[in-house]
Length: 160
Image (cartoon, rainbow, N blue to C red; front, top):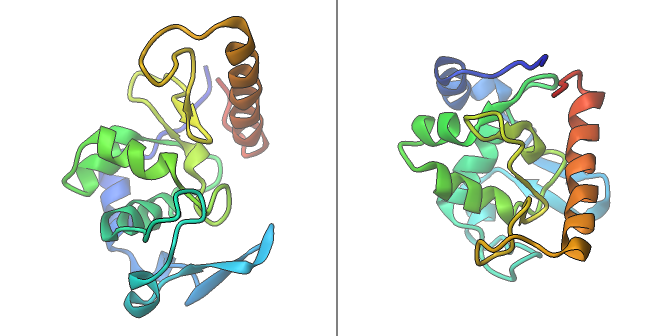
């Protein structure tokens, strides 16, 4: 298994490094009208198109930190949570509704501490939302999402 992980120290450094912050607002390639707001004023009223809700301050902290994971590296939900003095589940919930994926917020670079690939595009693989094992059709859809996450990581030089 070849894999690079951004450890807690590296993740904490990224959180404090203002030079790595994106431009004032980043235009997202797939939707020219959607941008990643950085100013506090813009963030107060920015709605998540996936949920229809205002993105919380905590979610923006998660997205800011995640945006700084370099290409070719992965980090864990736990490492991000430690850097944010939060829980891995809270980080996962913020990334689950990430409206800026995959660029400029590459949530596909975040995996579980035990090297489990974790979720992608709002799904947690192998289980439905109530924790039951998925049926064959659900698993086919989730396998496609797993492959999509693995393909994105492979293009960045991360292999499992």
